[in-house]
Image (cartoon, rainbow, N blue to C red):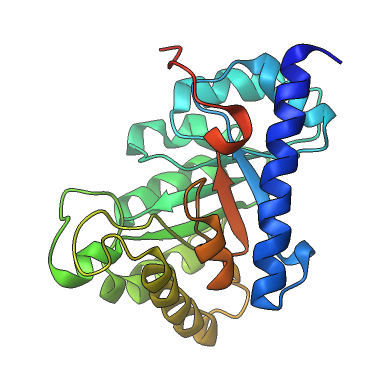
Length: 240
């Protein structure tokens, strides 16, 4: 085992222990939570090492980098999650490799993704509506995500779009507004929004929330997917 593989294995072990403890505290089974490793700025070599350690879900936030990594790992059975803000002109590229898009926040993007997916022979793209909880208090208007009150309409658009499956919701703990510094309260609010969504769309069960700093709070509030980068991979300079 190489030094880097040992580092990654140690990082995974620490994160796994945190997930197990959080699931235990919340009275949840470990298999209710999927670890998605965010490999942005890290090399393809790390993806391949992590795959060898059993990771199957990977996330990226830039299309160019994601497309390159997905192509380089095409021989592996991996699930690719796109989690960054997505321009409509990148929809065709993302539809070529992504299994999930977590950051859908406007109807125009729904249309672009639907058009891109239906133009190729592939399985439906699983889509999550990104919720900007800070917009509920009238702040954070420049940040990606739809305000909570806009979720039902956007979710309906996704559910009706050819080639797309409405998978659930995603959020990032707000830095401004009523939930700033309160990830537990933010994720509890997301749980309420998710419950309302599932009353109309029962299959939309995914709740993507929690990162390296707050995965425990997210799991406590019912997150099904946690997106973890630095806690697994370590902190290193961006590669550009």
